[in-house]
Amino acid sequence: MSHHSPDIKATALKRMQPPINDSISTIASSMNIAKATLYHWRDTAKKQGQFVGRNQHNDPYDPQTKLNTIIQTAALNQAELSAYCREHGLYPEQLQQWRQDMLSSLSDRPISEKDHQHQVKQLQQRTKQLERDLDRKNQALAESAALLVLFKKVPSRLGGRGIMIGQPQRQQISQDIQIAVDAGARLDRACQTIGLHPRTLKRWRINQPQHHHQIAADRRPHALRAQPAHALSEQERHTILQTCNQADYAQLPPTQIVPKLADLGIYLASERSFYRILKQANQLSPRGRQRPRQASRPISTHQATAPNQLWTWDITYLPSQIRGEFYYLYSIQDLYSRKIVAWEIHHNESAEHAAALMQLAQHKEQPKAGLILHSDNGAAMKGQTLLHKLYELGINSSRSRPRVSNDNAYIESFFRTLKYCPQYPSKGFADLTCAREWTQGFMHWYNHQHQHSGIRFVTPDQRHTGADKVILQKRQVLYQAAKLQHPRRWTQHTRNWSYQSVVWLNPERPDTKDQNDVV
Image (cartoon, rainbow, N blue to C red; front, side, top):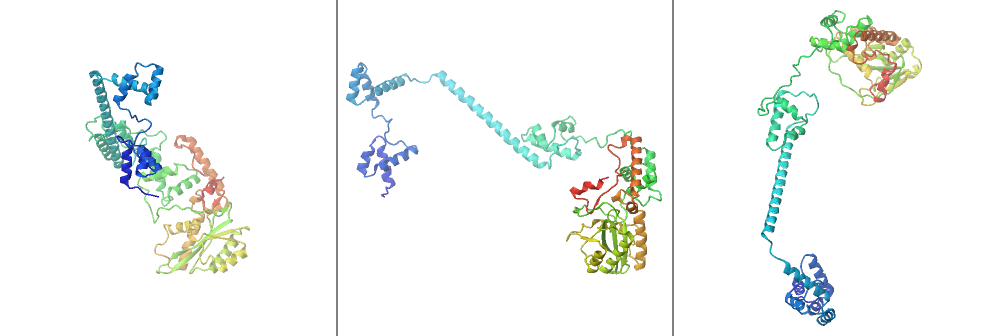
């Protein structure tokens, strides 16, 4: 296949164009180029916008020839005209088209002054319209840039009815909005960008928009409000403070004081009111070694609906007065009642001591078959001596998940109550006998006097023996009577003194949490 140089291609295309106007056949024979190649070059040149050669619309007759032909055929009839066209290689339609083109060219005349002015006016109007569009787009661009800068300055949107904004922040917001307005933004769009109503900004500026430095402060913190009709009187507040500072309640928080007063048939106010009044009197400072509690998300594994169905146990250390020497407290707690059913203190941690303690707890409580004992994965809990004893007593063993420290939360909570007790010896115990004597007194207080928050503020022994049902019922009746006496002091229901019939090992799981309040 032959290849033609660009010069040959340019020469062939030039011969196709006027004034030469050679045909494809002539160029092919003279330059020895295939017709298909020439046709391809011509079509490509046409697609590229080049006028190449004559086509079906090219006219070989010049204007002078057309004029002479029209003059010669003007007086001929139809037959003579047909003979003339055949003789000169023309068509009657060509002559008719020449006549129309000639008349059309003769009819063209210069544009009048009026038409010229009209065209100029239209061009001026179009120019003004384009200038207005350009100004509007420039303004929109400047507004968008100003709003973007404003949006970046304000850290968060200010939307929301009733949100209190301090005067320094109001001052800064007003200045940022004014800068955006000066840069080309509209006031309502600037306020909308940061979620602020324009009327709010006008109210901030104290009805003096020309003095933007004068910003009004929020008057709600200093507003004088009428005291609610159902509010506690000064005498009632004084009575609550006196009650909390009595010798019997001086060491107790409101969570313990309110249930004790309810057991005596006395209602002064809600537990929340006790806390609020003590805080206002600056008597709610942290005491002892208490620290904020951290929420946990354990997974439920077992439940208890009566005492002696589910026990939890663990071992904790008790410090001695000699550094590095500890005593070990073994404790078994009933999950349903929170009662410590058995405990013992030893010098060391071993499965033999745990087995002896299980034997003691079994003898004291006489649980029914199916008792579950839950513990963590310590060495004493997994010792063969203890496992053999549990099998002998018919007790099922349950353990926490590996590397999960809060699967045995109830007994850990008990150890915290023990070690954060105000009477807990911070310097340690002198010997094993002292540790056992102090722990015996604490266990008696915990089981028979301590009102546990997890069981509606009754003692573990009351819960264990079933006496808590009557106590909770009396509290419920007392609170209902207090609500009837002052109904406006309760927006909804009274305090929940209902009886808990189901206790889960880890009650914070969503599908079991609602079962804690089943009556």
